[in-house]
Amino acid sequence: MKLLIVEDEPNLLSILRKGFAENNNEVSVAMDGKTAMEMIHNYTFDVVILDVMLPDVNGIEICRRLRAAKNFVPILLLTALGTSENIVTGLNAGADDYLVKPFKFGELDARVNALYRRSQQETEKIDAITIGDLEINGRAKTVKREGENIILTAKEFKLLYYLAKNTGRIVSRDQILDNVWDINFDMNTNVVDVYITYLRRKIDKPYSTKLIHTMKGLGYVIKL
Image (cartoon, rainbow, N blue to C red):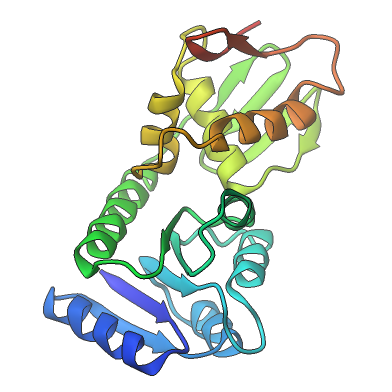
């Protein structure tokens, strides 16, 4: 893998760089947000490991800027702030995974590899999905309803696309966590419900026909 590690703590940066290099990865590093943005703009990386608290531009803002620019490189956030609110903020900004400090290198390595595997799978050609007046283009990552463009965050799109691939089939919260986030969340988290709410505001609320349905005690289903 080609990795970019963005971390301003020298000792931790050295440990991470050495660990990933020893696993035969090509590792680049940055110690501030501005440098990280320049490197991501000029080079291609398979995964970005991004500290939240950085000089000048913080990790959350970097996520937002990249996703706004349609750059969907997998991002794993490193954060000392492990509250549910902070985690949701990071994921909603466009991060694909997070790890709370302090952590074991083995877990970080496993999560980075999982992100890489998923990103490789998603590079395959994906056909468009149509559900009534809802149009989803997986390759271009665009969504339309009644011909109008709907702007989604990267994670909102992944959730909608997963539901759409399973049209008419109930998927549980655990299945969504496994397939959309591809990480071992605390199963008591409400992050799935939060993102379903986000989707409904954009996909369903402005329209008379509701597509996203809650199946009490079972999960969610998208259907006409």
